[in-house]
Image (cartoon, rainbow, N blue to C red):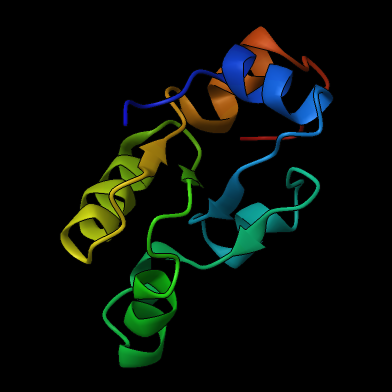
Length: 109
């Protein structure tokens, strides 16, 4: 499965067809603003066995990883694919892309 753009994700959310969304930013970034319905799992915690198991448990479900600009979420997506999550996707451009393409009021540094 390919990565996803902010416009594609917004369309899916508007249609009530939301994938699982995981924000891999740091807690201080979450404090600014997060998308409704996201799960927060910082990329730095991915080495923990319980986080790895949680990711494995997504199995065949579609999971979109989100970060500020798409770099960390790209790493998370690759990691999830290695863990067997074939439908792992990266939000291209991250929350900066979301702000530019969907919601200019979104609070991201």
